[in-house]
Length: 285
Length: 345
Image (cartoon, rainbow over all chains, first blue to last red; front, top):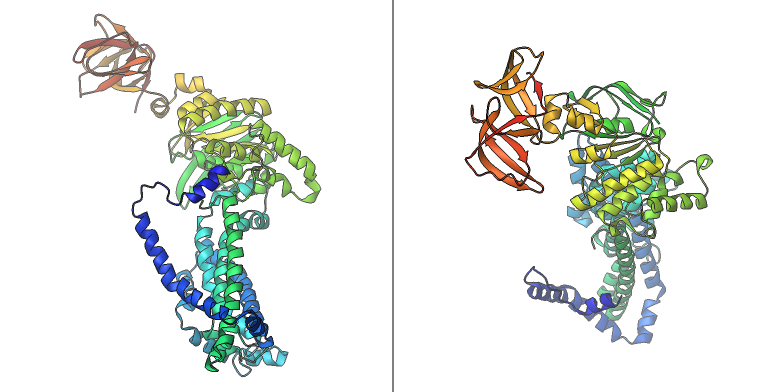
C-alpha cells in the first residue's frame, strides 16, 4: 500500500516511450481549451447568481420536471439499448448470414444521420396519423408528443454506442471458454448467463454510459417528437434554449449547472464501477 | 472408466482429419496422444470429449455408447492449452462451477461444494489462493486451477489438450512430474495430447503415435522408443539416421562395401537402414563397417555428437560418442550400428 501511494506522487514513470512531457502538455492544453474553459465559465456564471437565487431557479417546478424527464428518458432508453444492443452485437459476431455487412453498416446510421432528420422521420411514423401511430392510437397507445416518444428517439440515437462497444469484446471471447463450460455440464442458457454475460459486463457498462450521456444531451431528434409540453414532455436542453430566448440567462445557467453536476456524478459512478470490475477481471490494467 | 474408440472417421468439410481410428483405453490408464501438428490427435481428443461428433464410428464409455450423448451428458473433464478459465470468477468459483450448475436434485449443498473445491485446490497445491482471480495467477497456477476445475465434477475420463504447451520449459517439467503424481493418487483415466515426445515418453503409461489422421503405433514408452514399427515412428521419436542400403544374401551393403551387419531372412534388394545415434560401436579396422569422414563435432551435455560423411551421394549420419573420445575434423572414423531396423518403401 505504501508503494502504491508513493507511485501516485511520482507522476512521471521512467519509460522507453519518449515525448511524455510534450504529449501530456498537448493533452492538457487541448482539454482546457475545449472542455475546461467553457465549463468553468458555466460554473462561474452560475456562482455569480448567489446560492439562494440559484436554488430558487434550480428547484423551479418546470425545471425539476424537465430534468426528471431528461435523465429519466435517457436512463430508460440506455437500458433498452443495452438489451437490444447486446442481442444485435451477438447476432453480428456469432452468426454468418447474407446481408450481415449491410446490417453491420446500418448500426452506424444514427451516428451519421442529422438527428433532426431522425426526429422528423420518427414523428411522421409515430404521430397519431402516421403509419405506426395510426395503428396504435385505437389501442390507446400514444407515442409521439409524450415522454414515450422521447425514449424512442433516444433509443434510436443511442443504439450504436452499445453495439460498437460490446462487439469487439464479444469477438474476443474465446470459444474455448464456452467449451470449458459445456464440458463441465453447463447448458447453453447457463453458459450465457453465468460465463459469457458477466465477462461482457464492463463493455456493456461503457456502452450504457455512452448511450446515457448521449441521451441526456440529445436535442435535435427529441424536440420534434416530444411535443415539448411544459411539465410533461419538455426536456432540459430545450428549456435552456427557451430561457436563453427569453434573455433569462441566470435561469439557463442554473439548469445547465445542475445538469453538469448530475451528469458528472453519474459518469463518475459508472467509471468507478468500471474500474473496479476491470481490476477484478484483469482487463487492461 | 474404460474408453473405447471404434473405427472413427472424421471429416472437416471433406478434408479427412481422422481415418478409421480405433483405440482401447484401460480404466485408470494415463495415455498420451503424440504426433506432429495436423496428425489428428486433438481431433481425436475432442471426439472423445464430445466437442466434435464423428462422421462415422463410435465412442464407448464402459459399455455405454457415448457418441449419442452431448458433451454435458458425458461427464468428462477437459483441460485446454490456454486454460480457458472464467476470468470474472475467483479461483474457488472456477473450481466449483461444474458442481454449482447441476440441477438441484444432483447438486451438493453449498458447504459441500466449497469443501470439495478447497480439497481440490489443496491437491493442486494452490491452497490460500482461492480468492484470487485468474488474471492474478501465473501460467502454471492457472493450468492447475483448470485441472482442479476439471476434476471437480468427478469425470469419467480426464482429457488434456496440450496442457503444458503454453508454459515455459522449467514450469513444464515441474508440472509434468506433478501431473503424474496426481494421476497416481486419484486414478482418473487420463488422455493427454502433446507434440512433445519427451513429455509423452516420460509421463504416459502408453503412447499413441499418430500421423496424418491415423494411428501409427500404440505401446509403452519403451516399446515405442526401442521397437518403432514404422519409418515414421522411428523418425519422429528421438534422433535417427537413415542410410540407403542393399540386402544381398542376408548381408547389408552400403554402396560397394559390406557394413558387417547381417540381416538373416531379409529378401534381397534395396532398403532403408534406420539406427539411433547412440546405438553404435566404434571400430578400429574396417573389415565390414561404415566408414566416414568427420564433418563436424558438437559437445552436447554429456555426449559428443559427431557428424560423418559416409560417402556415396553425400550422405551424412550423426553418431553419439563419449565426450572423452576427441576427434578432429576431416579424420576418418569407422563404426557399426548395434541396434537397427530395416524398412522398405
